[in-house]
Length: 176
View (cartoon, rainbow, N blue to C red):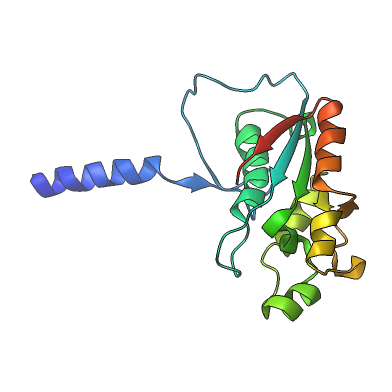
C-alpha cells in the first residue's frame, strides 16, 4: 500500500512539473501550465514590451536562457488566450549577450562551435520580434558588421534602443 501511495504521489507531482511546447514557438520557450491563475493579461489589449538582455550563461554550447524567455513569453500567453499579434516585442542585447547574435561562421571562429542561439533568434524574428544589438558592445568586442546575424539590427547603443522604445510606451523587462 505504501509503495502504491508513493507512486501516486510521485506521478501527481511529476505531472505538475511538466513543460509544454508552443503553441507559437514550438522549438523553444517551453512553459508550465498554471491552472486557474489569479492574474492574466487582458486578451483584448495590445502590449508593447522591450526585453533588455545583457548576460549569458557559462556554457557556450547552450542557448541564452534570457533570450529563451522571450519565446516563453509568447508561448505562455498564447496558451492563455492572448493573441500573439497583441504582443509587440523588442529584444535588445548587449554586454556578454552580444555574442549571441553572431553568425555561425563568426561564432565558430571565436568559440569553435556553432552559435546555439541561431535558430532561437530566427524563430523570434519569424514572430516579428525586433532584435537589436548594442553597437557599442559589438565594436568593443571587435566584431564587424558582417559578423552580425541577418535577423538582427545594429543600434547605436543599447541605451539608444531602450530610451527610444520606452519613450514610445514599451514596458521594460530585464531578466539577467
